[in-house]
Amino acid sequence: MSKFQLMSEFLKDISFESPNVPELFFQQESGQAKMDINIDIQIKGADNNFYMVDLLIGVHSSLETDGRTIFIVNSTYSCLLQAEQTENEEELKKTLLINVPAILFPSAKMLIEQIILNSGFPPFKMQQVDFEALYESRQANDTAPDDDLLKSGKKLKSSKFKKGKADIIQ
Image (cartoon, rainbow, N blue to C red; front, top):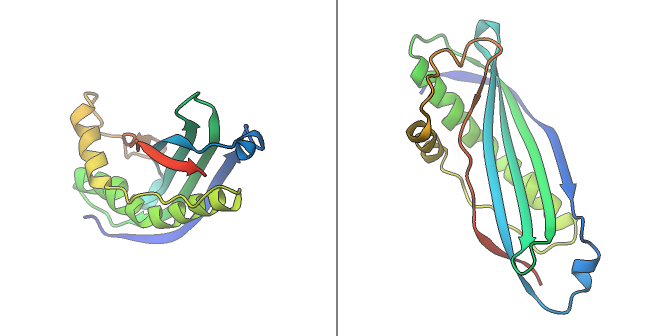
C-alpha cells in the first residue's frame, strides 16, 4: 500500500427521491423490494501527488411485483489526499481504489442509511463492501490499457457492485 495523508473527507453531493409516496405507504399488503446498489470510484489527480477520490453510491429500491420505484438515493462522498511519491503506479492505483474507498465507505453508508430512515422507510443496512474484490473484478473484465490513468486530470473508475433483494415495505 502506498502511504498517503488524508487532508479532508466530505459529502460532495446527495439526493433522495421517492416518486411513489404516499401511495406506497397506503398499501395494505407488504411487498418484497428489489434493491440495486451501484458503487463507483472516480479519481482525479493533480500536481504534487494530490488526489481527489470520489466514492459514488447509488441505491435504487423498487417493488418486485410491478417495478414501481420505492426510492432512489445517489451520493458522492469524497476526500482530498496527498500520496507519497512512488515509482510503483500499480501500488498507488490499488491504494486509491481499495484502501481509500474503504476509509470513506462507513461515513457514506451511515449518511445513506440515515436519509432512508428519515424519509419514513424501515431501517436499511448496507453490507460492507470488499473493495479489493471490486478491484480484482474490474481488472479481470478490463481489456483497455490504463498505464497513465493516474496522471493529472484523468479519471479512473472501478467496477460496479450490485446487491439483491431486501424487505423494505412493511
